[in-house]
Length: 126
Image (cartoon, rainbow, N blue to C red; front, side, top):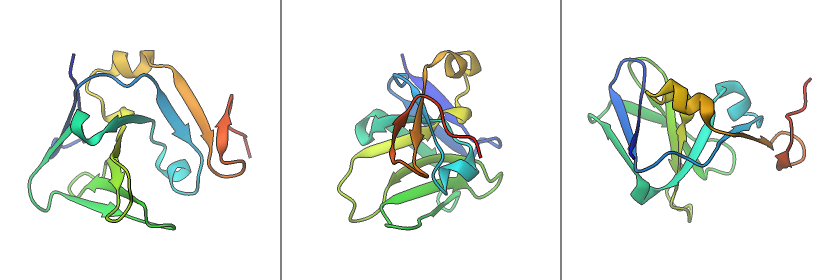
């Protein structure tokens, strides 16, 4: 069963070969601001379709992750490994999934990227 996702305006279309096992929420300095719920895949499990120039990406810190967003509506759609990073991981923002019931049914995991850099049962509240 393939799963589809897209930004608000539809300029960025994503198709995943299957649903993720779970979604992950992270509170690091970047993800905590984005509010994304990440589903993880390998590059061969995801197809991103967007016209040339339809997306831009933001890279910060250790310069290993490119956070992609739509240049029209601004939605954060996915992230990929930056050039030189040895990873075939693609994370898709579950909030972009077209099947909202599927997104809501997936188990949530939490990663404390702000303090402990570990999986936790619940993210700390400020």
